[in-house]
Length: 207
Length: 156
Image (cartoon, rainbow over all chains, first blue to last red; front, side, top):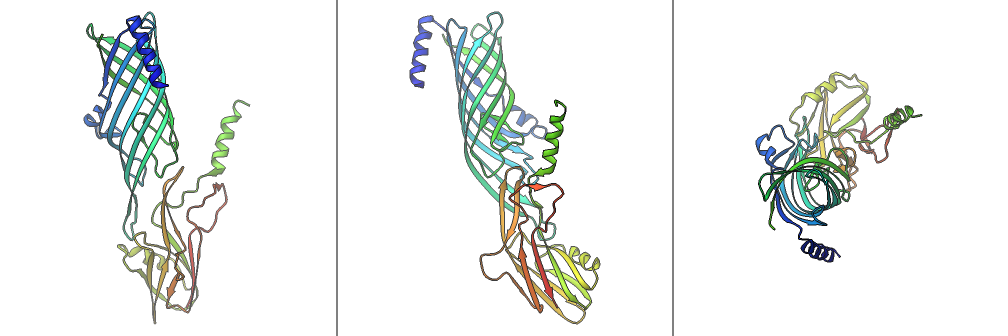
């Protein structure tokens, strides 16, 4: 069904001579290297290639993204001082463009397959600390909504500034997951992931 | 009505919260009955810091003595040595450690009765043990307290 939809969009796009774009979001992890002590993420690599296809005379578009994230989050709890994560995710978004300004709103599904590991520790001032380890593989699915503004850099290149919010769920796990690749930073809720953030994406028009 | 809803929510949160247990090194309670001798010291094999045991001795008096002693999270048993003025007794307590993740708490630690039949070994005249969970499954009701964890009674 997804393939048919994709082909239908493709044919439609060709008939209407709509634009196709390739994009890249590779900036999310930068603060974790620049400010490793101030940021929740530490030494985190995140890359997210994107494909955007206009439909209906460029007023609407469909975006497909696939991402990979690998890194560390700090200060999970008193028992777990850090958590390592690695994950792949795919997302899609159906966007509607404002007719007067280069702004879009979009919504679409997201699915993430990730694994997490960390050490937990119970302080033992009398007999010594106990340390154990935990490793989890988790799948999460949900939806992401976004609002974006395109800044035109050249005839073919645009910088997209994007505000996003996502809600997702994942099966009960044996550890609290603070950062879920593709969905984002989650605070204090175990099975429901609620996250929001800001992203910068670079797009190149290929036709 | 609009203003009472947040208060109601706060009240429900306060009177019923997740029971997480100590989330640190656990302790057991020892009641020493017919304790007529002078207890000079208590120590534990493998303890890095023995001062906590001596503080317990200083805070109690003979007759009916109650001690709260840490147990090791690095092993499924802890052995204590009780040095009296005229004799020395040993007490080994067996348990099964349980580390797991609990929603609303994070990682918690509990100690249950061991799978083997031996729960306690001692040179005391009598020794008995009971195991209550340190982490309760049900939510804790406000104002309700219980005797959590391992309790031991010994008789000289």
